Image (cartoon, rainbow, N blue to C red; front, side):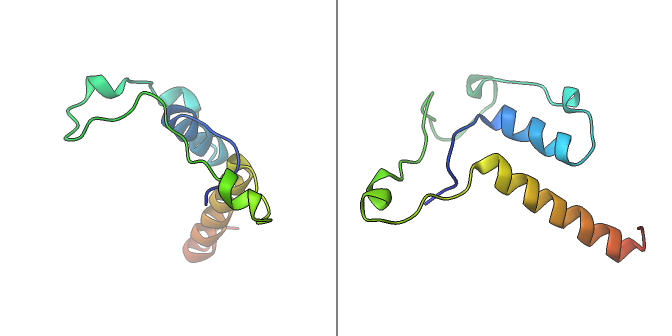
Length: 85
């Protein structure tokens, strides 16, 4: 199972920066072919949860909503631990 929706690693990283209050323009896109990976990667792949849904398992939240919540929790934890806010 995974969160609903799909994205690229580039879009994922940009949104992390955005939620953390850092300029997403600092993230640069690259192709897998530009780095030395040990294993070949498909050009397009997503997790398919349709079988779970066909067994009445409810859909997970959208990935970006879950990411926003998670990054918010991390920021709050860091603020508490550092005495900020």
